[in-house]
Image 1 (tube, rainbow, N blue to C red):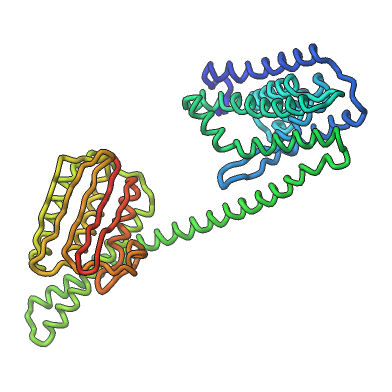
Image 2: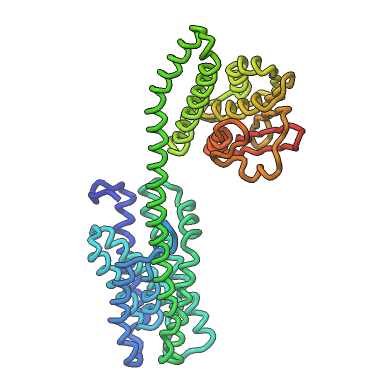
Length: 450
């Protein structure tokens, strides 16, 4: 939220003020209609217990997911609503939440809104299912309904400010919050009701449902450890990507100088070193291509935003064919292009061009002289696809499982082309698959969503 209450939108300010007012009115109404029910003395001891438990639970939320926290404050709040007198229970829960918010140094309006939300939810739970001196199955079911009413009302009210502040549709935000929090919410509600029932029937074992708390604490530690490990892994991967980028940049310039000097020596046509110079030029060119692919792979791993535009796939494949025409002629390989229907996708043209080019490069290198490489563009109901078909020897079944992994190579190449192609296609939300048979050639298919 904004650091200044006056800077918030009028509707948001109205909600922040209105919820506490409604909460106070609901609590006063419950107190006036139900009053101070005569209770055993031990129940009054729950007032400081629930108050302290709510403060601690709100002050120290636990992790139930890598990026998801939950407050255990619902447990003492529901217990206060079900076991304490109607005039005391909601106030106890609200005071605990208020104290926790103040200790966390939240703004006064955040504190007021959260307190009002809890007042509303606990008042509803008290009205629906608080325990009195008489108990039976009906009262137990009412207590369950009261706990559920607390959980639902607390959730639907809590997302109102977020919806107004982010301009996200309220229904979408409620659905998203409920889908992420319902397991923890139901577990806490069930734990609270079970503890309350046991407190009335067998006080000595009332704390047994709370055995879930150490388990949650252990889970919290495990998730926090996983987060730290993920952060360290992210730093390692980032360093690796920077290393690949730096190496490719640093080596490119001296390599270009070496290739230039070798070209000069080759033009001198010295009989003694002609073969050695030719081999050196070929190896230098191979190194240059590998560095370019390392740079491409590092760039793809950075997850920088795609520069999307409307890309005509027929034009894209024609550009790739033109770029590899000389290499294909040198290898005695021809190109065939098939376009069943005009197809366009919203994509990063340069990255997609590189993905198709890597597949075509492989197809040309592995196709025998006199063979043809086919590029087929197909438009379907759910998207478009590009097929790159070669007439090469095919791929052995044992290599298919690791075919798209990095540095997985056969007798030539850097082992990076297919990895780059798959990474690029996946970043566009598509998939890359291969259909091959030993001795029957291979068909690589890029499938892109509409």
